[in-house]
Image (cartoon, rainbow, N blue to C red):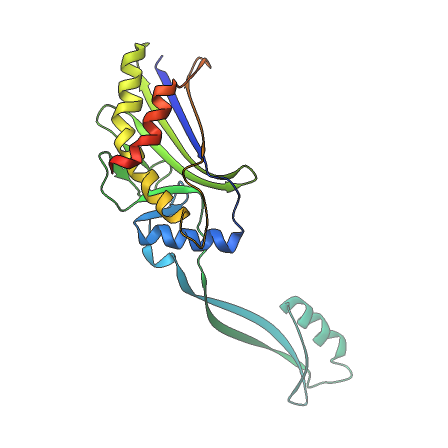
Length: 239
């Protein structure tokens, strides 16, 4: 049976954004080629930023003597009213009125998975198929990246998965799951932080909390060494 090694890195930047502000952040990231989506979707760049939103609403008018007396929201209600009043008003009927309005709003991202339109060392997998919004590497490692905006704050989260047939040495694990992905982590971190620290969002990207650990399929866990955490802190500076 194969062994799955998992490395999780969380960088917490602090406060959660309100939904509209998070939508604005999504648009700002998209301008730099980093897209908030879900695990299942392909990327359509037209769905990010300040975009036109078309909304359709339908009401049903109760018409007597060719004049609309009032409206209801559901066809079923209109049918009941017409049936109930047709003895008093033989010419009663209902009509359907659709209103189409277009306004511009900040597009809401479909999820918290990050996909990319920037150059990375790994191969970007952003097809519309389950599980393929990630970055793959020639050594078999896969990296999944998320930007979570919830009760715990604004968290950039990396999840590196490496499956092997046999137990691997510590050095091999760190090479595959730290060194191989480090440059891409730095590039992604740099882009995300360049948007977070904009005045309109106001995040301090230097004073951050970093949580890092390794897990194996056997449910054993080992904490990342201070040296690994230091590498992550410094990776953005080399990009």
